[in-house]
Image 1 (cartoon, rainbow, N blue to C red):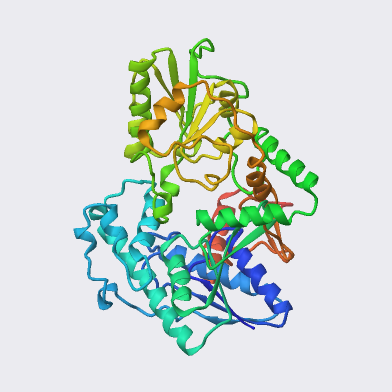
Image 2 (image 1 turned 90 degrees about the vertical axis):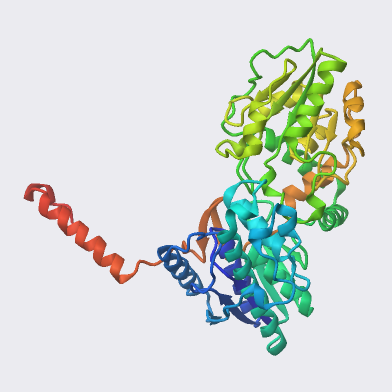
Length: 490
């Protein structure tokens, strides 16, 4: 079998190590493995936006160090990213400077490749600004577009001459990564996208779909649940996942509630009032994936919060709306977050993301929980709290949440004394989160962002120049120290 691992740039652990894991597994099966990568040819990448030569060097050295740990040498090619400009391709003549908004940028497409969407996704991740104006970031976006087009065009040409059986790539959402998926789809090549699994000791593979594909994920979650051997075991495991979240257990990602003060409620909390707790999400994470992640009821969370609170101010002043801003946006000062923090009404309380208010205690004390897709929405279902979902997410197809279909239904729904909905299907989501993935054989994670592949931590090897600089610095320090201080140090 011919296996191609496309690694436009080495990523942080464990993602590059996952590529090494995949390579080693195929080598062990006797497959032919080839790495395709960049040695500075790409105009831009998410991990080196400014094209810093030192970062490029570290990327190359880390990759070389990692590939050296494989038991059998693999084929490598660092010259495959041929220079290519989007303007040379039909459909790519739209000037980024003429894009008045994100919708204009999303419309830029080459063949089957949603290249404008992919560039927007990368740019939004870099700036943490979901309302990014393309005309204000022309150079950045044009470079992302050209870099992803390099990958797309080169891969399609390569597949026509030398067709692999399987192609692997990380994540698939970012510009150059999505180019790999779309090139594979255009040429009918099997593309497998890798990402984190249920714990730091697992990774997961998505076949010919983005990991962010809501409908595909729904099918996989249901199949995973149905394939579980013992119904009792899967329910116990799912329940343990929910309990672990409250206990701040970190399994495959950071616990954003870890620094919160257990049991703390917002100042002025009044249990005699009807309390609606709204939990926001970090909108920049999903704003530029595809149309299925577009908000269906409100243009953004701030507008929704203002409309809901203002309606209750007139309808029933006894209702208190408390907004728990997502801790992940604590240091993100984009326009949406600043606006949310500035919202002010007598019946509206904004809890800033950096405060120590306990999100889970707030959830338990509220009469109704409202989310736009935050995981706490399905957690509320498990803990038998009425949960209202106002946005797209991976659990939107599961029973358990109230899902108004029209904007004018929201306030009427929240005005009611809602009862919890049966929480069985919440277990399907939790069982997936607690058990999906493939256990590593060759990589051992030390924590969420480091580990060892075949016993070796994969770091950039220092160059001779760097070693000379370090040696010179050490000698300089030694000369300034008294002789007594040097005795017995070696």
